[in-house]
Length: 163
Image (cartoon, rainbow, N blue to C red; front, top):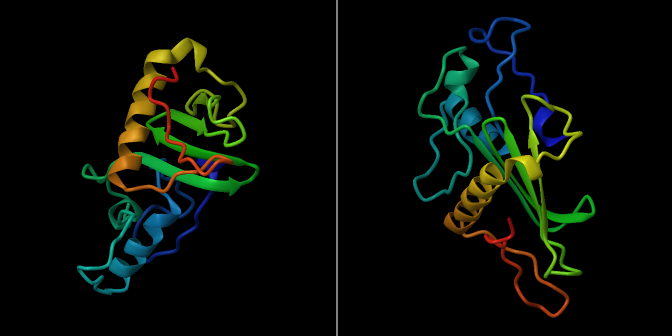
């Protein structure tokens, strides 16, 4: 389950012992966070994909923090070529299907109601799924993402008209 992986951090000050933060974070956030905590300056020409978690670890809210998450696997990973986009309680998973690129598919979960991702709620939430698919596609383009290729060597882009 991508949405529920725990991270344990021990600091002198911050979230109360045994406390839980419900904020979204990714593995990419560890680098900028450790750099800040250790006083390390990241060179201006070094791209940083993650966001600093220091304010959240201190127990404070971070209103500037974007509460979205993108996990992109344009290669075989756990059996599928997929992109996951999370925004708020919603998690959209887009499967590229290189064997049949004309047949991509999506699933949608509401993590507030179904944190273990047992029920695909796509059919009852098409408007939300379309918005998430558009956001995901825009983020991938903004980040200059690599995409899977089919067996004829053609690049497979997400289909914004799938839903």
